[in-house]
Amino acid sequence: MPLTAASSSAFQNNYILLRQLAGRVKENMMVVGICGSPRKGGNSEFLLNEALAVAGERGFETEKLLLSELKADYCSDCGDCSKGRPCPKEDDMKAILSALERADGIIVASPVYFGGMTAQLKAVLDRTIPLRRQNFRLKGKVGCAISVGGSRNGGQEKTLEAIQAWMHIQGMIVVGDDAHFGGIAVRPAAEDRIGRKTVVASANKLCDLIERLEKKNSCWGGD
Ligand SMILES: Cc1cc2nc3c(=O)[nH]c(=O)nc-3n(C[C@H](O)[C@H](O)[C@H](O)COP(=O)(O)O)c2cc1C
Image 1 (cartoon, rainbow, N blue to C red):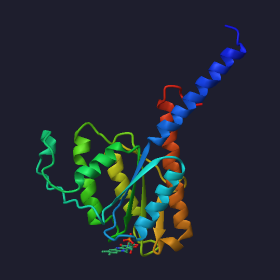
Image 2: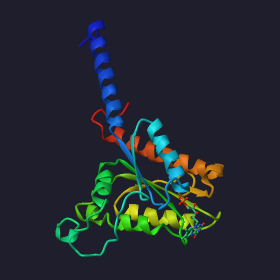
Image 3: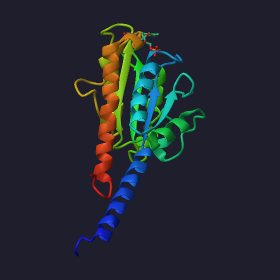
Image 4: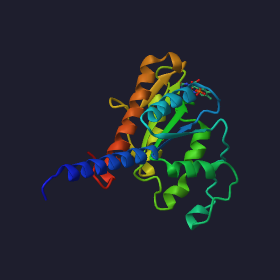
C-alpha cells in the first residue's frame, strides 16, 4: 500500500497513542522500599528515601514500608502456609506481603547490627515464605539492597549479602550499584557523599533493569 499523507498521519497518531500507553504502563510500575531500622528518621530511612526519590523521578510509583511503624512477629514454623492455609499471626504482615507482591522492584535497607541485618527485618523476610511456597510470587522482581553502619567496615557487605540471599531464594533478580554490591554507607549517612552515590547508583540500576524487562515484555517490543 502506498504511503499517503493520510495513512502516514494515522500511523503517527497510532504511534503517539502507543507511546502514551507505554508511559501509562510505567506509571503503574511500582518500586517498594523496606526500611529495617527500628528507629524512625534514622540513617537507613534517609538512604531509602534517596533511593525511592530516584525511582519517583524516573516515573515509578513508590511505596515505603517502615519497620519502625509496622509490626511483624517472628515465623514460628507452624507449617500452616506449607499446607496452603493462611498465616495465623495477626499483625502487619498481610499489608507487607501485598505491597511486595504488587512491586516490580524491591529495595531493602538495613542498619548493620552485629555484622548483619536487624532482627525486625529478618523477621519480615522470614515471614515472606508463603510467597515462595505459593508458586514463587516474587520471582522475576528486581531487587537491590542498602546497608549503613556506625563503622566504615562494620559489616555492611555482609548485611547486603544476607539481604541478597533472601532475594535469590525468592527467585528475584539482584542488582548492585554498577560497580560493587549495592548501597553501602557509614553513619551519619547524610554526610557520606560516596555512600550516597552507591545508593543512587543502585536505585538507577534497579530502575534501568525494570524498564528493560518491561520493554522486552511489552507487545510492541520497545522502540
Ligand atoms: C545493636 C546494635 C548493633 C550494631 N552493630 C553494628 C555493627 O556490627 N557494625 C556497625 O558498623 N555498626 C553497628 N551498629 C551501629 C548502627 O549500624 C548504626 O548506628 C546505624 O546507622 C543505625 O541505623 P539507623 O540510623 O537507620 O537506625 C549497631 C547498632 C546497634 C544498636
